[in-house]
Amino acid sequence: MTKRQASPARSAPRKVRGSRTGRPIMALLDLLGRRWTLRIVWELRDEALTSRALREACDDASPTVINDRLTELRGAGLVETLEAGGYRLTDGGRELLDLFLPLQKFANGWPPFKTR
View 1 (cartoon, rainbow, N blue to C red):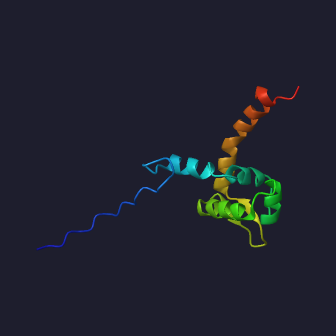
View 2: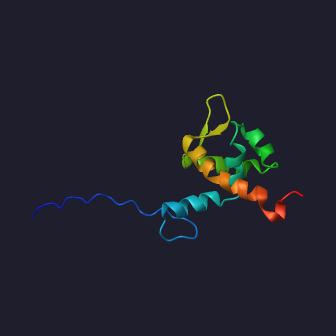
View 3: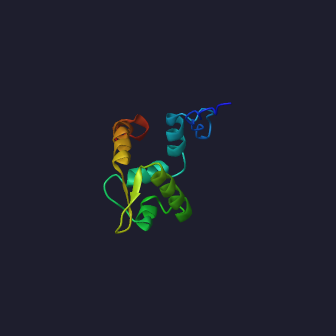
């Protein structure tokens, strides 16, 4: 009797809220849909911020929630911790931010918020 060679392991789909497939787009939308996640990415657009400065920029959001989101964003490779302290977007985080800039342009001209 010969041993069967193990087939390459398939990674199980990552569990994602609202999706049975765990497709990458669903995982990204799940992450970005969590409270304060997009705001954190937005606030890190120009400069690195400490946890305290980020919390203040996010209208004094709960430090627990900010830390949880930073942990998730770091795990996703979108944010990194600086040796000197603080957080900044990674190259991937900047690429994601660039995708939002057309939305900012749209929002600035969106009739409900358009300045008169």
